Image 1 (cartoon, rainbow, N blue to C red):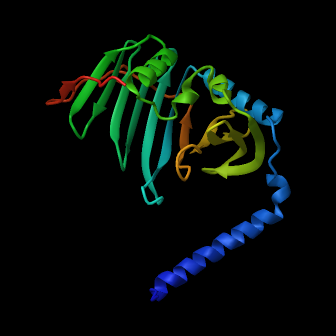
Image 2: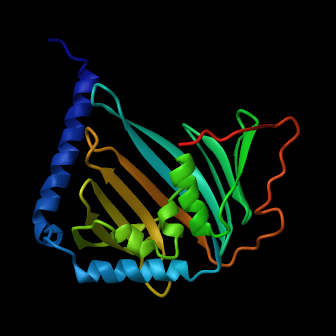
Length: 255
C-alpha cells in the first residue's frame, strides 16, 4: 500500500509526541492516581467556588467554547464559538454567542425571554418566571434551550453539579489563561466532568470540560473563561431587546 511520505512522517511525529506525553504522565502517576469515592477536598473547593459566584450581585464574562460532534464513521469533529454573558441578580441575563454553528442572542429582562438569530433576522419571545433560576428551568424543560454554562449561574449550583456524583478527586494545580487554578475531576453515572477553579480570594471557575460517556466515542463540551468582571457597568439597554428594522417575530417550538 502506498503512502504519502509527508503525511506519514507527520503522523509518526505526532505519535512520538503522544508517546513522550504518555511517558511523562507515567512518571507522575502517583499524583494522577484516582481514588474511589468523593474526595472532601474536591467538594470543599467546588463549594467555595459556587458559593462565591452565587453571592455576586452582578458580573460579566467572556468565554471560548468547543463542542465535539461524532460522525457515523466514529470520527470526531470540533466546532467552536465564543460567548459573552452579563448577569444581574435576581432576574437579568444577557448572553451572546457566535461561532461555527450558531450566532444567537438571549435577553432576559425579569419577565420575558427573547432569543434572536441575526442570520435569520428572526426573534421569539415568551413570558417566563421572574427569577434567574426559574427562567433557566423553564427554558430548559419547556423549550430545550440552554444558556451557555447555565448550571454555574444558579445560586444552588453546588447541589446541581453534585447531583448523582459518585467519585471526585483533586487532580492538582494547573494554569488556565495565565491564572493558577485547582483542577478537579468528577464522575456521575453517564457523565465525567472537570473544573478548574482560580486560586485565592476569588475562586472563580476558569474552565469546565464535560464528557458524555453514554454517547458513542464520548464527545466533549468545553468552556474556558477568558475574562471575568465582577464590577461591570450595565445600563438600561443591557437587558432590553429592541428588534432591528425588518426583524420578524416567530414562535418558540415547544420541546
